[in-house]
Image 1 (cartoon, rainbow, N blue to C red):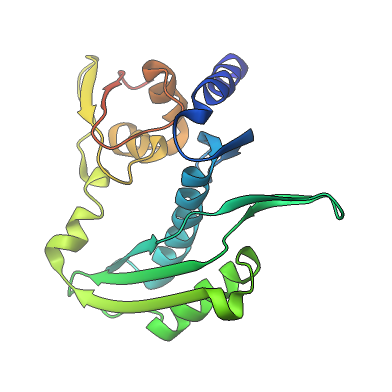
Image 2 (tube, one colour; image 1 turned 45 degrees about the horizontal axis):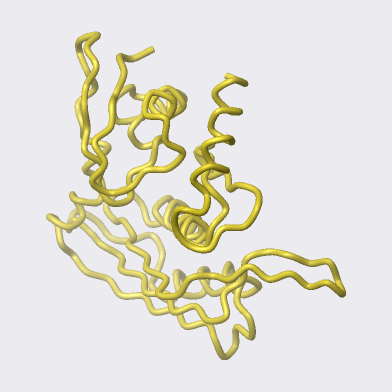
Length: 209
């Protein structure tokens, strides 16, 4: 396991400057995935965190789609030694998507407030530069598309499979979809020698460990 983690970190450093603004270090997602420390990945992991928390609160009949229009910037304050990613401006659009089988457990106003509270210290002058909008829609087809990965059937043979990644996929999602647990995400990551997933990639899914 230590070898694979070190390999992932090496890949991060090699691939870190390939997209977005990159700074030294790395990002570890909630699922344990290692990503290069750039503005695009920071925005993605911020969205993923908010979405996972909101989906838990909304209940099984609703899912969220979140868009942050702007990318963060990495600031270094030499006087206070404070460094980190911050949004100069954050325009956040949240769409709550339902399948029509049940009510939400929290209101749109609750969602807006929760996201504002979470992002408040991540945005420069948030009273002026943080805009959060939440709307709801009942759309069974769109709801289903948000959980496509979770419905992939796990392999029943010991053969290697191939899969074309979709928007929003993570190694943890694929591990759960193919193996029934998120614990084996490193198996897929190491088989594909890639620290991050991009939409449209054809990747290898090894047999279940």
